[in-house]
Length: 212
Image (cartoon, rainbow, N blue to C red; front, top):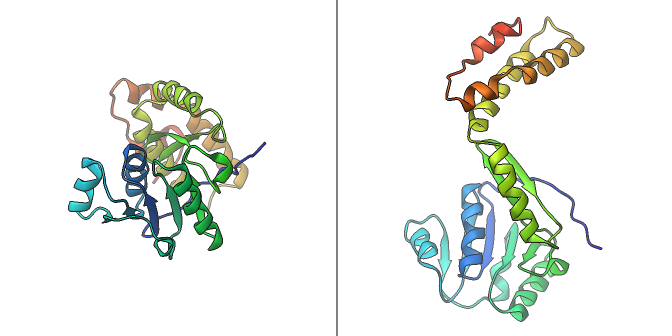
């Protein structure tokens, strides 16, 4: 059975090719754009949302059929057309050039797969079933979205700020810093944020016996 190594990749400014202009391609493009990819779409037709993104120059859309040279210079390739044969051809062309490719609905042809995501600012939780049960991934994602509410956006930033202070502190040993971090995570910060209360990271530092 296939297995995929979980990894988060920096695609900022890198060419990400999406072949296809339907709803599946639209979802792929939306995520790629959100994470800073330089998205190129190749398809004779495109959804209204993709057309709009092209008009706003968020993506580059080539209104034509796929040609093998389209994969040149790509960091990632997504084969998302409604033709299994064409998708396989795209996958093979990418692999010839050692470019990572995702072929929709056929995990066995993929170098990587796109997980279901729970996104809360800088906090990203990925859920994957190795492409075997995508409906289960989506079901789990919905459960996690309830558990990890929008307050985790602010919480992640607060934890990061406090961690930064600890990293810079020259008076504490490594063990003392680890203990402070454990104490940080035990504070009822997330509960206060969930209730809509404002929480200052300086207040948190004070509770931990630290100063900025």
